[in-house]
Image 1: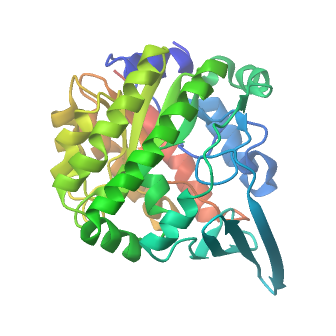
Image 2 (image 1 turned 180 degrees about the horizontal axis):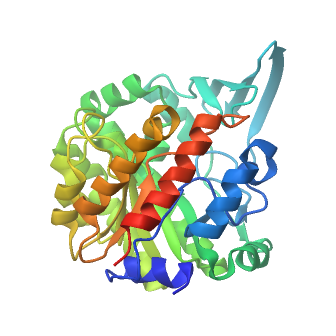
Length: 371
């Protein structure tokens, strides 16, 4: 059985020859991914390609400019250099006034942090939404490359934002939760507007290209204790359900991405009809064991998880082996499980301890994951 078959069987709720092994955001078969162009990752990526089941993260190119619109945005950007980082200040001129943002990118860290968000109030949100919505267009020009590179070594997974993610990330996290909890009617109107954009853009994306799996991001912003479960049910479930239904109608599968404490909202997640859930973090970062997630999802959703990155970065090889064995004991039975870390390293060079632990993770998963 090849990796593609193995993963698709799990997404259909079946049991393959062994538990599929994912390294999540470390993508073995994508020549454009940073980890495949960094010499310090070479040995680990070779093992990933040879022994694991790739979920190649890839999205079609688009002309999206800001907040799910392709509208031309009047933007000013200034970048300054400090000894170990780039700091970028940006200003957007909207029909209702200016918005500003600051981001930082550290040397040798493959990510960007917002230190100032576009919106500081609901009035700023209205300014952001005053930029006219123009549907996004997509190009599948790069699709033949990624399909050729992945082959039978795995499947292709695109990432989508739900309307909650678009709304929440306009603000600093604490300010977002206050907006959602205290100005709920305004927040609800914003979600409705963004959902209309998300759905129209998704239709257009699917008309251009349909890949194997779609990861929907955003629900974690509404998990307790950030928002009560009732607001998760209101602001996640109905909107994600519509996204899932549309993707299913085109032949794709869906994995719902939700960090944090999912115990109180797991039934709402299952109700979306998604085919899988990730990353199912264990306590104390999460609030539910892998065994309970598997029990509640069994026959309804596949489970991806739940080996935490901090164990791979800081644990011993024996601790990794023990945890992988426990994961298999908790979730392997009956299929419907993909073992996967909850995140991936973004530092360069890759730490030797992280490399050793990833290699042990892969070998342990092969050892304990046979059916």
